[in-house]
Structure formats: structure tokens, C-alpha cells
Length: 66
Image 1 (cartoon, rainbow, N blue to C red):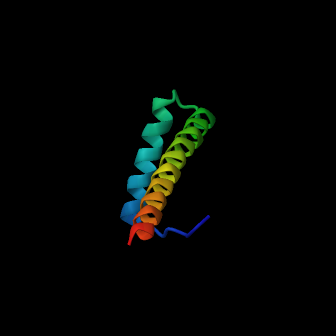
Image 2 (cartoon, rainbow, N blue to C red):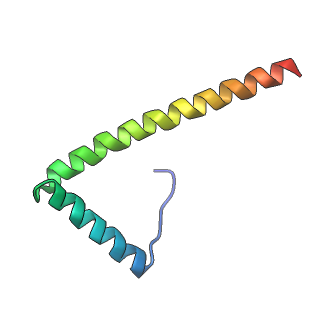
């Protein structure tokens, strides 16, 4: 884990409400909801990694020209 996020009470309440809706969307099954969230986060991480790699390649290519 890169860093710890601290939430105030309002943010915590909003997060709780979203979590409850997400679980309800998965027919009340928190394990199913968690599994989907893990898969979704994996997809997002792959996209972020690809973006970062692309930016590094662009930076390296521009550095070689100048």
C-alpha cells in the first residue's frame, strides 16, 4: 500500500453509503461485490501502468533527440 487515506466523518458516511449501494447492486452479497471490485481495480491498475509506460517512453524518446 502506497499511503494511508484519512477520512473525516462526512467522507466516511459518503463512502459507507456508496459501499452499501454497491453491495445491494450485487444482490446483497458482499463477497461477490468485493470480487468484482478487486477485478475492476486490477483493470484500472493495468490501464494506469500502460499510461505510465507510454509517458516514460515519450519522455525517453524526447530526451534522446535533444
